[in-house]
Length: 174
Image 1: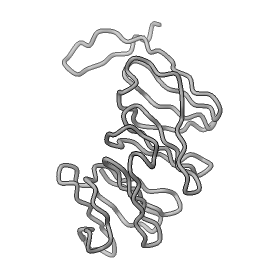
Image 2: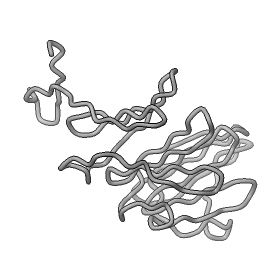
Image 3: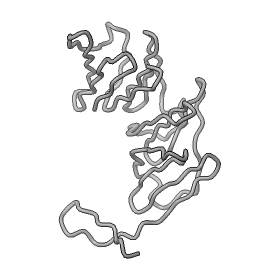
């Protein structure tokens, strides 16, 4: 996974190894504990518009102005599991998703988006996309989660049987 921060630095999470690489000033460098990066198997990286960078795995690390801040799943009020998606909404809040739960980071405080859980509530929610009207959309197995700023709503998708292994088709007729 990769992201580019506001200064133009490219950050790369190397997935299986959990390592982080930074490309800036035509130089490639590993970012390690010697640089201040706390231990975390990093599988995803996300850059905020203001330049802060998030490293995500079983927990999260936020890098801002040279300072790394670690957050555990408990601090983010999430069930144990890998954080798999992140986005920033128009108001600057960062939305993090893990095991079907959404944690919202705003002003150094986390809150959780609560919604009516379905039987597949432990499924990973990813990605998180904000529409032009400010509505956030999060796909799940057979439905979409729609959040308009005050209300979370699950919308069922008319799924048909897949034709090929791993292929999911949406029945456009419904």
